[in-house]
Structures are given as structure tokens and as C-alpha cells.
Length: 205
Image (cartoon, rainbow, N blue to C red; front, side, top):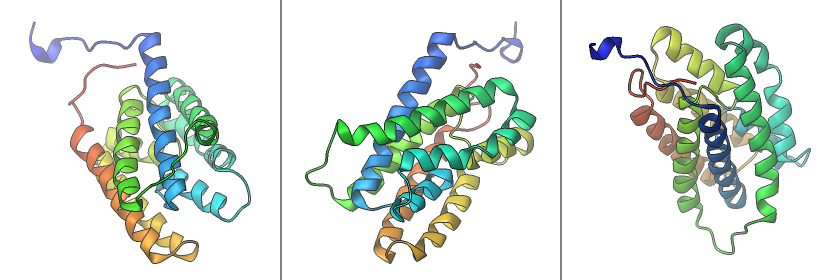
């Protein structure tokens, strides 16, 4: 049997479950690093940050609600299994993001360190979700669809979209916070661009 004809390994239900919990915990921690440092990120999470910074609702509530319209696209383009995993991931991030401040605090936090470490944690968390056929909804759904159907690199497409969202944030936070947020977005998407390439990971869910 040749390598090309070797069937891909399939993730078990337990493997998928632990991946969704692990990935969303990392992302929730990254979100709280950004929040404590007054930073932002891209995608629907960036929109949730903007909503929270205006004092309307918490990040978790905003993130969950903003993602609702994107599930229709997920069902049509990616199928029910992907959509259900994504709904689970979004729900977990929404819960964990609002719960984490009750479990951990930052007495001293350098904003540059927060942007870099937050970008790495969020990139690894997203990578775990992507490899188990899940996402954080919104922009992630569009990015994965473009990679699966047109071969466009997820990290590069995400980077462009994220930077556009951060530019809009100029109306909400100061320029220094935007600059550090862009550093975090670049770090995040470098993690994805290097590690999330078509054919590099063969196991499926």
C-alpha cells in the first residue's frame, strides 16, 4: 500500500472532546491577557472586545451573540459536524473567558508580553480546533472555507482580515494599544501560517 492510499486516522470522540476543551481554555486565557492589558484581537473576538470596551455587555455574551449569524454559513458550507463542534467551541470560549478572571489575576502584566504570549496561546488554541474540524465561528469559518475550497492559506487570509478589524478599533482604543494588538495578531497568524498547511496533518474528525 502506498502512502497516498493509506487511510487517514480518525479522531475518537474523547480526542475531539479533550481538544475542544484544551483549545478553548488556551484561547480564553489569551483573551484575558489581552483584556487585562487593554488590547484587542481580530475576527469576531475583536468585535466582542470592542463591544465590551464600550461597556455594553461582557466579552462572553458579546462573542456568543455575534457568532450566531455565521452558523448558517457553517451548515451550508462545512456541514453539521463542523457546525456543532464550532458551536461547542464558541460556547466554551464564551463561558471560560468570563469565568477566568475569577480564577486568575495579573498583578503585573507588560502589554508587549501580553500581546506576544496571547498571540501564541490563541494561535495554538485555534490550531487545535482547526485540526479537530472546529473553529471559533465568524471569520474562522470563512477562512477555513477559503482554504478548503481554494487553497488560500488560513493564516495569511486571517491576518489581512484581523488587521482591518484592528484599524476600525482606532475609534475605541489608543494608537499604542492598536500597535501592540497588531503585534499579537501577527504572532497569532504566524503560528497558523507555519503549522496549519493543507496536507500537513492527516487525522480527521
